[in-house]
Image (cartoon, rainbow, N blue to C red; front, side):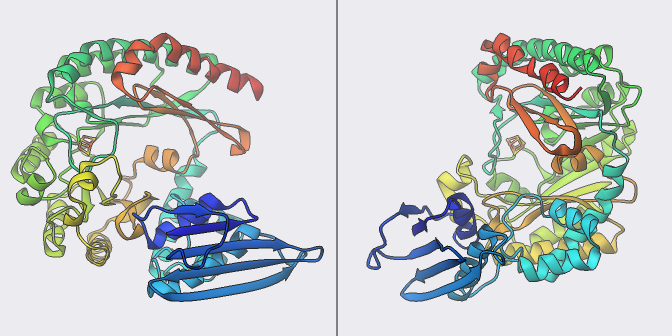
Length: 488
Ligand code: SF4
C-alpha cells in the first residue's frame, strides 16, 4: 500500500491506523502523489494563518473516497485526532467493516478509559470511547469493567513500592507462535548456558537488592516469567529463590508468582521447592485442551499432562493457579476453543487469561504457515463465548492489553475469581509501579513522581550476550540510583 504523509509528523500513527485494516501489509511511504501507482492512503495537513485543513483519501481495489475538512485555529486542538479520525472513516467505508476497538491503536485501552473516568465520570468515559474513537459498545464495557477492577489496586499502591521481575528465557522447545526471546533447551548449546546464566542472575539479584535498599524502595510482589521459569532444575530454582530471600526484604511482599507455563517442565520436586519458598501463585498453561492443536503449534505435551500437573499443584497446596488459553491457534475451531475454555472453568483455575493469537514476524507460524490460523471472525466468536462463559461462572476481567498483529486487532484479557487478581499484572501493565527486573531480555521501569516520565533500562536480550556483557549491564543499572537521586 502506498502511504502519503504530507506536511505532518504522524507517520507512525498513520501506519498504526492502516494496520487496523491491513495488519500484515507492508507500506511504501511516498512524498510525491501519483494517482496511478496502485492502492494508496493519502493524508495531508495544510496550515493557514487562520485555519487548518485536513485532506485524506483512500483508494483500494478501484474504489476511492476522499475527505477534506477545515477548522479554525481556535477549534483545532488536536491535529493528530482530526487527521486520523477523517482517515479512519474513509478506511472503514471502503473496507466495509469497523474494527471492534474503532480507531484505538494503543496497547492499554483500560488505562485510557480509567484516566477519562477519573477526570470526568463513567458516562463521559463511555461516550469518549464510543463516539470519539468509534469503539464497539461491548468492548467499551469490557474496558470499563477492567478499569473499575484496576482502580482499587492502583490506589492502594504507594509511590515508593516496586515489583521484582525475574526473567528465565529458556523453554523445553519453541512453540510455533512464540515471539519472545526464549531459547529452546532442546539444543545442547542453549542448555549449556543455563548454569552460567543462573550464576549471573544471582549476582544481578544481589546488585539490584542493594539498589532497592539504597533508594528506600519497598518490594510488594515478585514475578518470574520468561520463557518458562520451571525449565530450571529444582536445585537451580532453589538457589535463585534463596538468593532473593536473602537479599530482598520480603516482609511487605504480598504476592509471589512463578510461571510454570509448560506442563512438560513441572515436577513434584520443583513445585515443592516453590511452595517451600512461599511462592503463592503459579501458571500452568494449557493454551488449548486439544492434543491435535498442541501438536500443530509445537507444544510437546498433551492436554492430559496439563491436567495431571494442575492436580499435582493443587495437591501440593497452590490455591492461586492461572491458566492461559489462546484464541485463534492454527487448526483450532470455535467449538474446540469452547471446549478448552469450558475445561479450564471446570477445573476451577483461579485466573484464566484469554489471549488472542498475534502473528508476529519472529514466530514460525508467520514464516511457515500463517494461513493455518483461525479467521478474525472465528476469533471474535471465541472471545464472545469466553466473555459470556467466564462471567456466568463467577470470573471478572481484571487486566487487559492489546498486542500489535493480534488477529482481528483483538485483546488479551486476564479473568479471575473474586479476590484472585494478580496485582503485578495490573501495576506492570498499566505502568503504575516501579519494576526492577533481572535476567536477559527484561526491562527495568522507573517512574518519576506523578508518573510524568517513565525511564526504561533494557537488559541484554539474549542469554549469551547477558553473560558475556554482564559488567556493562551492571554499569547500565547504576542508573537506578541516579534516577532516584534526581527526584530527592
Ligand atoms: S512456552 Fe511460551 S515462551 Fe516458551 S516457547 Fe512457548 S510461547 Fe514461547
